[in-house]
Length: 632
Image (cartoon, rainbow, N blue to C red; front, side, top):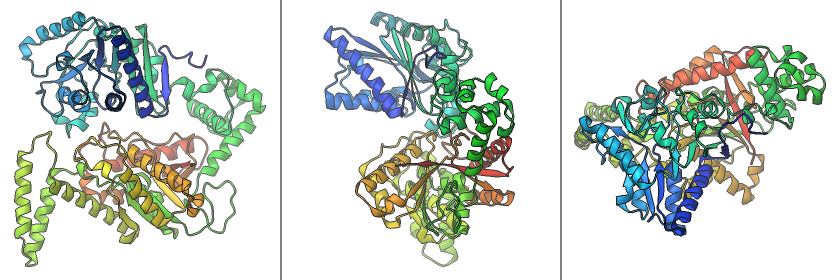
């Protein structure tokens, strides 16, 4: 069977959006079944970034399809402690903001742990919460997310299978993962209230959702042994539990990562490359040194039967790897190289780099960016968002203070700038942790990032007319939560594409950005290109799209179709280009679970790609930037 390695059923969807729709439909079906029987529907609710799209879909179903929640009783999994329920970061606020305020649920039917319960009475209140749940008849359907360490609810590794609703210490990895809600880790509570594992296991049915960078823990939870060190693995003991994941979160499942071990396999060129690279890295061998015995002992006997000779397979994969390496990302002029990743003609090309934030261009593909310009191509950068929320308040007052001093130095009337500085200082000094910036402060933060982006382009050698600040509207909410892709975002992008008519487009293909900005930016580019193609724009048929990964991850080496090598000098030049973004250096708000600075992430990632190529038998370079082509 295809899923024979999985001890919990797993449904894989192309995206988190489609997976969320499936879960919403299951919830709606259960609500309607209960309504038909005139029975209450008891739902266990989750919080965090995972269920946001689910709740958005349930709200849509309520508004557009008449789904009523009059018979629904909810019990939430957890809550930070201590926290006032009206605080923006509280799960009480989260649930009302994303769901309860937009549907017809009876407020008396909403149950959430209270983060302001007196600590000396916590045990009593937790027992009462359990009793309320039992009086309601138990949970019919429990919705779960999963933490990077395998936690469910706030049941961290080591939680007992017999645990009930209680106060717990939050693991440091969980607190780091949740910094996006609080700006920095010092603001994240160290304690939380959570339903226990035994409470969760009493639910009649469980749907666990996992999106994005959860692949390793998903695989360990559904394919590994049951262990309290991975709380989600205990769900193997539940009689009706299903994991609902997107393709990224499914990447480490055996049927996805090593499908040749699960049954019949279609041995395409891409699959052969994947299998041989996986085996070579596992055995710590170069591709050309693999033997027939290696194939037999590592589950690839079927490939050997189909292809006949191990060395011929080795050569096929070796050539695929070798031919992906090029120092000419825009194509080598005057050369006919059939296996080259890019076309030689036309030369020079018009190249458009889409950068979701004002530093993704230099962080993710700085070496390629510089090489394209140095090789004579007409390079443009489209900065898709302002990136204003990732600037600290200290930077705002520092730069306004500079403006005041600059005007004073040259005898310019600085009364207005002094007033702006005074107002900004007063606002920032009294700003609450859940309070959005004023429009003026957001504009100043956006200007800071815009100036850094322009300085980067000048550093590479571009003139300012090649910098395009798109300021896509979906981003401009003033908060971490962004809007979905809108029509205005697509129209702005189409206008820029029509203006430049590029031969090459580079855009961020990584969906691991923890706040979803990269994903929306990618969706906007894809939708714009589809519309332009449908409209029959003549230049579009000659336009190739290359996807790079951002600061958060890299392509799997078996997927890479173009690898741009970098010398030690080029690595240093890229580092200095990243340093131009001073507002993003040292202490950056909302940088996710990785504590390294962006230049360190980029260098480690690029060096690792080069090391993997070398381990497989290719030339050893200092670093490599990697790309995958998208066909539309």
